[in-house]
Length: 296
Image (cartoon, rainbow, N blue to C red; front, side, top):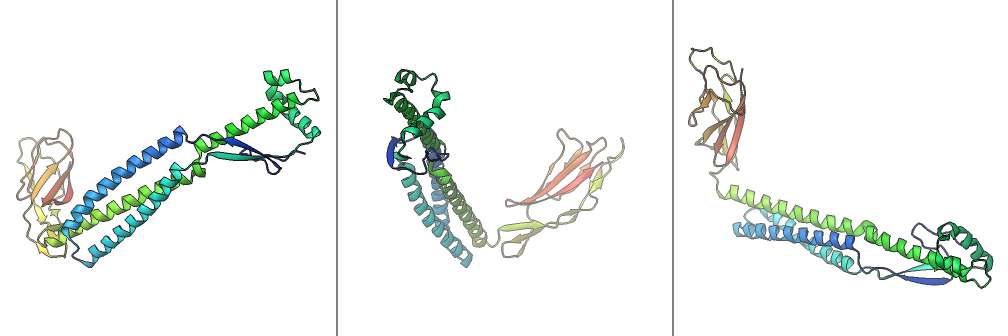
């Protein structure tokens, strides 16, 4: 009897080789590869820019040296994986071989009977007279079967090149690029902080005396909420720096009646002020701390 076919249209046994041509490329696979290459090049340009800036800052601590080594290792692996990815993307299977069993006359009859429903409207099949011992109809049926297997294999390659392995490889390469970019940003940030010991790295402690302020009645004086604990500004090595920043205020859209002294941080709430949550932010050299004040 005829051997069972796998879901890919490959017979599980037999002696006759039927070679079917596959498309050298597919639109879907090619588009995916083009998108990958575009993203890869974009990441590579970003990394090159960051690396140039990082190297200009120098390797001035064990932590930076470790980051430098990590980035170099990642880039070595990216280069190797990209070479493999391009080899796979540009070298697709040209042909696939279907193993067709050697069938007896009875086997051919059985196969034709299986194909009858799909061959009823097939002109070649009708004209071939499948009942004729000459086998013309049988050959037409087998040809139909071969074409179906070819289409099946082509379609599988179009939608699952290398059974999805190529897509996974591309994803890994892009992820490694993002890792290298992350480490280079860390390098730049850490170097900038350590190269300037007077640069703020953190701010904490800002506290207001009230925190919650009731809107005064019409005709009453404004309520003032003062800074109870001034912000503590520290450098990257933990040194406390003098506070020389400024205060900003934000609140509900269209809010009125609440103002702040940008130097002292004093908060003023006037009669008729808009109720809601307001945010006071202390900023010094790009580093900030924010606290909320409730106006009720």
